[in-house]
Length: 485
Ligand SMILES: C[S@@+](CC[C@H](N)C(=O)[O-])C[C@H]1O[C@@H](n2cnc3c(N)ncnc32)[C@H](O)[C@@H]1O
Image 1 (cartoon, rainbow, N blue to C red):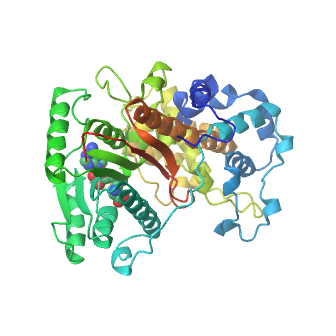
Image 2: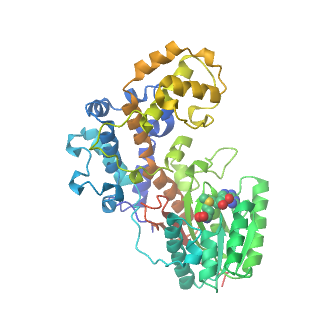
């Protein structure tokens, strides 16, 4: 059973409240109807509740507002001093006094907090990985593998499973560790990238893990066991992969695992779990939600995947899905004791980006694609000296004839939007702080899909420490397949 946020005890009520919240005009505006880059074109600031913007405008440093917003969605149990706070006392932690906020803003923030699935790491076993394994891992990966491997091993012991299929196995941090640590386990590592698999194979070989214990398979994973796939080609690819996995398992029960199975790979895994009889346990952590494919006529298996969420008409825009990849609670806390931020700051870059879009819009210059899909260009030294420098470089990267925008016009835009960087920074913060809601929608949809399709002991488990790994929700499930031993 899923662990709901503290204020909910009924999953139907929770699902309905969550769906209603993400369908509200305000949430829609903030998470994509108006992209921050288009904020000046569509007057995004003016479209927010007037009492919110009036209050924010009265605060001299917008970073206080940003910090207040981000703190307001932090899970109470996770609040603890972080490394960059060592000079701050805990009582100084709140950037602004919440009682000064307009009541409607406080209510909205509390709703966000109360609708977000719990993210505090659930206590569980970890393994002290030996240096031969950690040597090629970063700190974050060591923390993830030591927890995930211990959890998977525990499930295998409890459920009498010896065979593990790792989908999206990448360079093999998890699967090679499992094969090395637990010689009785048999591992099948599947990934679509030969480069990733080559690194995994090399790691296994360097540790002396024989192929009998870990096999690698290059396959692009799509569909599921074959029954539900949207196109006949993906259905046949899925069923032939199912046959290959079944042949490898040779009648043994399998646990299907994925560590940061990106985009809709997690959804494919859920389908393999419910459709392949020999797969009896599942543990997958998702990531890169921006790669999720929404449901459409061309992709009837797309998001959402559960009947319940489909019935509620749940949709998330491309920008909202991108928001789900953010983790503002892990942002470095600004040093608010010092001078107001310097002119070369991140917020100035966001402002210049939004002004650039406004200029292109006002002058009817078409670049192709939407503001969030433009080619990316790096900011070089000197680009942030003025709006003119920023724009001149941007137009040359975008292939626009520079003579279409004069220096006088650029100077006028710079004057007009001087002092707007705080607004753009607040708009950006508002959008990214919806991340936990977006991720809750995705996790709930996956949970519901599993329960609708015969999953047992289904749970959304916060397996990692959110402050190290913000994508810390593992979808777990088992099924009791009587035809299998
Ligand atoms: C974010 S990485 C995670 C790698 C590994 N599990 C880890 O934690 O280090 C995702 C991996 O999934 C693979 N992948 C993504 N979508 C896939 C698909 N549809 N079929 C096969 N492999 C896929 C990518 O090639 C990549 O290696």
